[in-house]
Amino acid sequence: MLDHIKHIIEKQAFGVCDYIGEKMGVASSRVRLYFIYLTFAAMGSAVIVYLFIAFWLNVKAYIRQTKNFIWND
Image 1 (cartoon, helix red, strand yellow):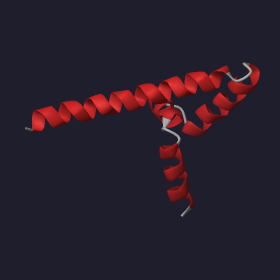
Image 2 (cartoon, one colour; image 1 turned 135 degrees about the horizontal axis):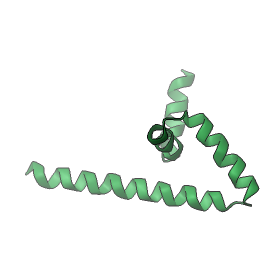
Image 3 (cartoon, helix red, strand yellow; image 1 turned 90 degrees about the vertical axis):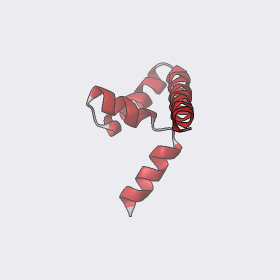
Image 4 (cartoon, helix red, strand yellow; image 1 turned 30 degrees about the vertical axis):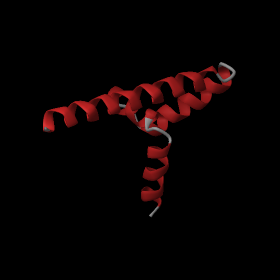
């Protein structure tokens, strides 16, 4: 039950930390922790980086979806 809730929350938060963790081979919880530390150390500028990465992942997913739709016809 808790794993299901955790999965839903991660997907709602754009999955940025999970994506970075998979690419780097690090646990996503560790990446989240570093984002929190970086946010406090850099006075919030890490939030801007997080939102940029979230935007980029959404654009990338949209492009992939559009390409698949074109080739399915």
